[in-house]
Image 1 (cartoon, helix red, strand yellow):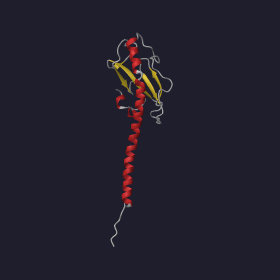
Image 2 (cartoon, one colour):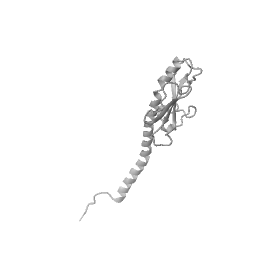
Image 3 (cartoon, helix red, strand yellow):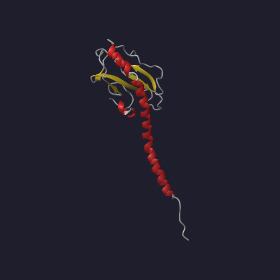
Image 4 (cartoon, one colour):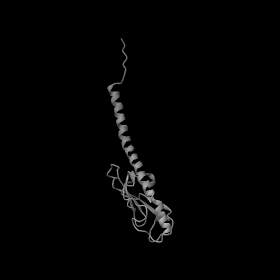
Length: 158
């Protein structure tokens, strides 16, 4: 009598489980990083809301208003992922991140700096000029304390 075997052997099942485990080990960290960058885009959006007031002040005032007086600061939570938005003496916009459940991001700062002619704007000398671009997330010169790994591609020191 010839019996035909049906189903999978234990070795075949263990091979499939091992392959799924390897794929999960690769996919889960990539997905978590993607989720953090997606949340970070909300922080960038909160910063961007402050660009117009800072640009208007540069074009219309004769003297810089000083840190915290650019007209767009928010001391209460600005969004689910932003604790506060503050401004520096030259119109730098700073957002403090929150609710990421990651100590590398929570409480850290993301900056957006006004640029005039390719250099950071200076409230003492550049009033009356138009802000031509913005630099986002520069860790070296602007005070961003969030790693570039978590920032959207559009906000990695550019």
